[in-house]
Structures are given as structure tokens and as C-alpha cells.
Image (tube, helix red, strand yellow):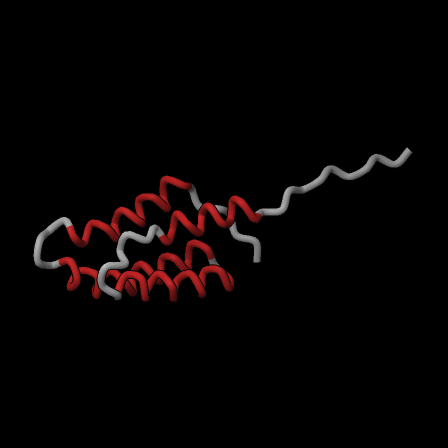
Length: 95
């Protein structure tokens, strides 16, 4: 399945939302328990296929584990997709 690439702004905002759980002192890790499954589901729906499934699982674990919130999962996948996309070559004209 060939999904459209999400925007960089969307990915940055999703990573920022993951960091935001630490904005209110004392609820950082509790907020992560709530945010982790939501973020993983959004990740899967955004990227789809095996990348979305693997990335969603990675994103879930990254959000649940302490001291790993700094990893920008959405932005890393955006960059990976950008760097690995296949360039379409124009067809050779037949004369």
C-alpha cells in the first residue's frame, strides 16, 4: 500500500505533543501512560503498513519507558520516508 507522506509540520507537532506530558510537573510519566497508546495508534494510521506497525510499537515503547521521550519518532520516520522514497524516472521515448 502506497500512503501519502505526512507533512513535516504534522510530525513535529506529534513529537511535541509527546514532549508536552512533561510540561506540568508531577504528571510526566502518568501522562505518558495515557499518551503512549494514542500516539502509537496515530503513528500506525499515519504511516501504515509494516512501517506504521513497527514504528507504532517502537513509539509506544518509547513513550512508556522513562527517559526516552526525547526521541522524535514521528520526525525520524518522516525523514526515513523522504530519504528512501524511490524516484520515478521518466519513460524513455520510443522513436
